[in-house]
Length: 113
Length: 114
Picture (spheres, rainbow over the protein chains, first blue to last red):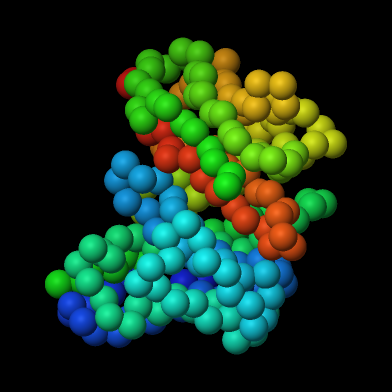
């Protein structure tokens, strides 16, 4: 079954440390996305990609980098984590048109202390 | 840029009540529109999708109509059940500049009282 898998599910990081969140999809979708979800803000787009080697800035890219080394994998990188980046992060994949859906992973809960 | 507005942060109903969740959008093109549902501890799941080719989406008793004139995409259900308690997100995807940008509203928490 096609899916979006995120790892880790939970992460505790120290302020100033580097954090990498990983996402793998078996949907063969071109587009992948990273969102963060916070109470009162809904889902906010951080970075997205339309294929291997591409990354695009979303609405709140500051403090985050993204990497798309292959069709299947899309990582979100926090080079210098801060407590304000404590949140739940969701990865999604999807394609335009036809019967394609935009499918989400189960999320990564990140706590920066 | 694109935007999606859900003004209702929370809706509280009783079982068998009629549900209406408001969603409006702003974009320069004719996007594909979605409603997603999120249960506690899970990622959002697609509830229904509407493209410019079909104006209405129906799924699991929920329906939404794509109104290009008023740029609205309200979600309705005739009779809600306790199991419908969840967060509902309106979203759009717009093909601008070659990349498909998926934008969400802030979500509406639906609470169904037994």
